[in-house]
Length: 257
Image (tube, rainbow, N blue to C red; front, top):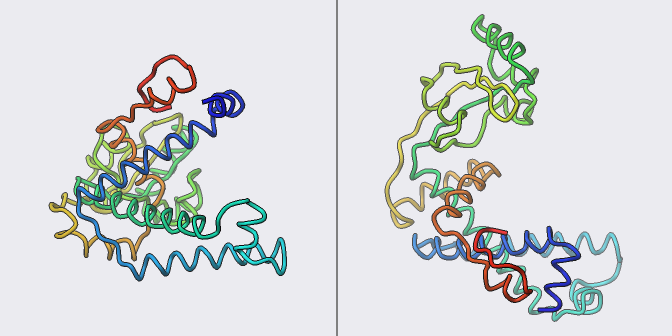
């Protein structure tokens, strides 16, 4: 308790992040069990091998001639076998999280859309006029958008789940192939082109596993998808951190740190 209290006072941001990560890891495990997700052992071991190889490569650049186990034992003061096992567990948790998140997305109304993000309404209206005049939306996004997706993918975003945000409402209110907006959100103005709207799929892993695995090969999980899932899970299964705060002598609180 003294260690945790001192850590909290010295670097509360890092400790709160770790608490949140631990809570998320438990939710991933719980959801994986509920859905009946089974990982492919060959993929797990392949990802584990890649992680170890990357660590070895980085180590050789810093300390040529030192083996990974020597660095773990001598540099970190940890048991190499247990450290390797923890790496494998982290990879397993990541692979499970990818499948839990994608299951969440495909089992809800979701829209695929591209966006152009601009600084003000005048710039948004000017871009809309150019798009309506026939200019390619992806090319305009690459030229004008303040969002990284403009240059990366012509403004195309990960699937958008139906919710109460102005952006989501616009995506589902805009016909496939049409352009919606401009709409203001978070101090920025956005134009949106809805590419497709997908009805939710039904089923757990036994029914949807192959479809989800194929989708992950085609398009890995992106941060916006994870954040949508995380927000939903925090509302559905809020973490109780009261025992931790009691341990360090802080006032009771039950919400996320």
